Image 1 (cartoon, helix red, strand yellow):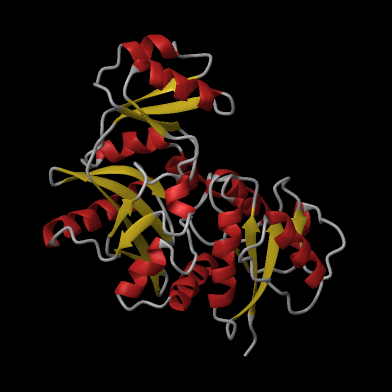
Image 2 (cartoon, helix red, strand yellow):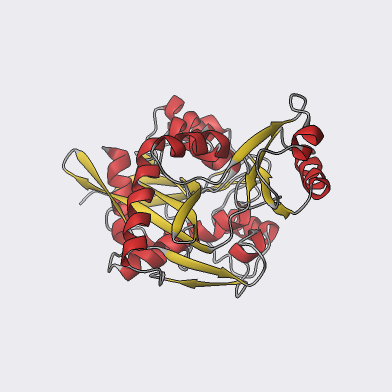
Length: 349
């Protein structure tokens, strides 16, 4: 039986570069090799593409290695002498690209648009859904239209908003949570109890970002729940998984809590009761559908006084062996090999 030739994009220029390397290690090891020939393509922090030149590419174990150590071993073992022009991807005969990228330019629609221009299908959501999900302000506006509870929020824009005046006269009370509107993975996020604390955080974000989301802080139980799609003929059937409760040992589920071993406790399925579980499943499907997501997504919530408030939807969520969607799929007896096959079949259809 002939195999389908696919590429696996990983690395990338976002702050989640090393997380993408870990995720893609699991993806590469788990994809059904009886159906697919997989060529891992490393995108370095400068956006350069490093493409293996040997017939059976190798994905080195990234455990305990820095980005530099990993990239050097990847290039050495795959006989890569120099970077390739990104456009060369279109000349290598790939039927699809499995996107193992996270955050930033990997998740906000740019790489999806690049592949669309080359005429190469890819896993996950398209340009519009990716961009909308990354834009937390516009995503919140959409979530509100479906009736999903959203904590009060507003946006500050550098050079356009009078940030200090706005923070001194918020239409909702402190404390608030502040994060880049287009950021990913909880980088540069934080709580502010006063306008001065808020201004300090906003100034820090404005160093590298143009837009900041300010949202009323909702305290409660942090949960996350994935949505998967399964191909059925020419159609796609979306269904919710089970929620995971996240108990960070720090004050919030920030970057360190997400990606440092032992920094948070994750309980799957979340012990939140049947009714709230059902509500979370309904809301996660609504988020997936109103954004126009494809293949899979994961939506984060805070449950406060029995009410789930949506936080954000991720279109390329983490895919290490212990990430949330693999945990949730495992709880339902779904193998990740099957999940990756579904994602590739959907992209190829």
